[in-house]
Length: 149
Image (tube, rainbow, N blue to C red; front, side, top):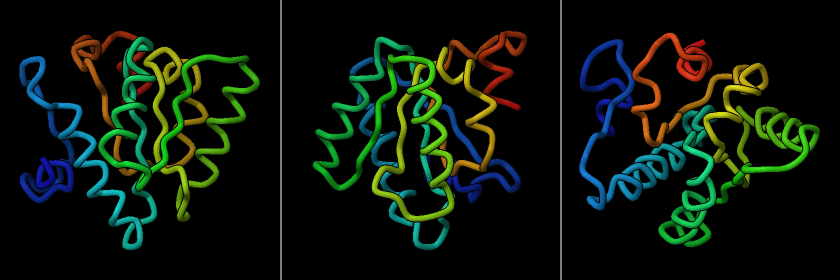
């Protein structure tokens, strides 16, 4: 995964798809990859992470990060709230990109990403993890287009 995401496997291509069966540790593998890339933030301050998942999994991702990284990495789950609060949180996250931050990870739903893509595309992000990626199989849908703008 690391070699694929960092472009070491195929020149000019940075990314991978993990499609294991349920219960085989995909979330842990993604958290491990994320942590490895975030530790490199001293070399590349763009290594922030956005985790995009179904709204029902936002809090679960946050709990898994706490469980596996035990305070070494702070994340912010944005799963509900007033429009103004969401805009403020996303803007604050994007404003810190490029510098060291205590909270280099946000976890949002596909719907939140789609609605606020104009904020999330302001700066380059090091890693985007799309849980339940089969939602992106149709390149005509708005979520796919928001992630690929």
